[in-house]
Length: 240
Image 1 (cartoon, rainbow, N blue to C red):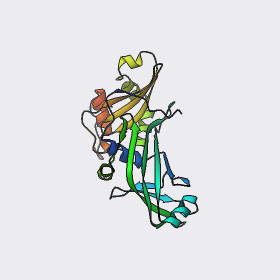
Image 2: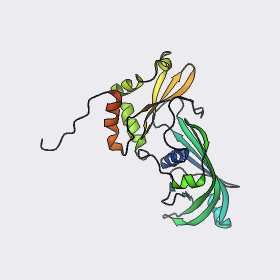
Image 3: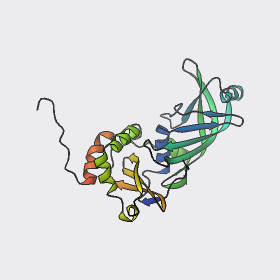
Image 4: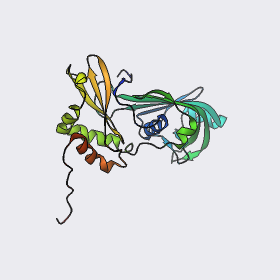
């Protein structure tokens, strides 16, 4: 996995950079905390609260926790990586970095873990929308994409639907399909589906936009039908 973010071939990433970072943090595949003297892998131990502040749960027996307990607060860097949930040669979808001051808030769990909040000073994201800085206030007030919590499972299910995937890949511009490169499902969000085209000229990401943005995952089937020009699905009712 090279870790390079391919250029956009058609359209752009959905949402503002702050919204994309909030979406990235919902189900990030890698979250790494760096303090002045320690490193901690915190995947699954992070969340963004209602106040828009990133909180991490640092294992109590880690060097980072001991350092935090001793100092009370520390300068810190958080690196975040997002990977596609389906197999492909290069699964990296986005990377982000946040810096600031980490402050101890308390303990959580039976172990217990040390809970600390990051007071963000700088943030930035690199994805198919390019590389962009993010204002800390914009990060705090942004909201993640409504599909983010369910996106990985939805994408896996869609990837298993071979006829639908073939129809979707047929919507990729011919100039990107003409050399017979492999095409993979990369992302689902409220604005559409993103495909990654692996061609001889290198990888490119292509967005297939929905006619209208999604408000929740239940609307995905209807949006895909409309995108492919298929008739709306009938929903059967009990007793009919």
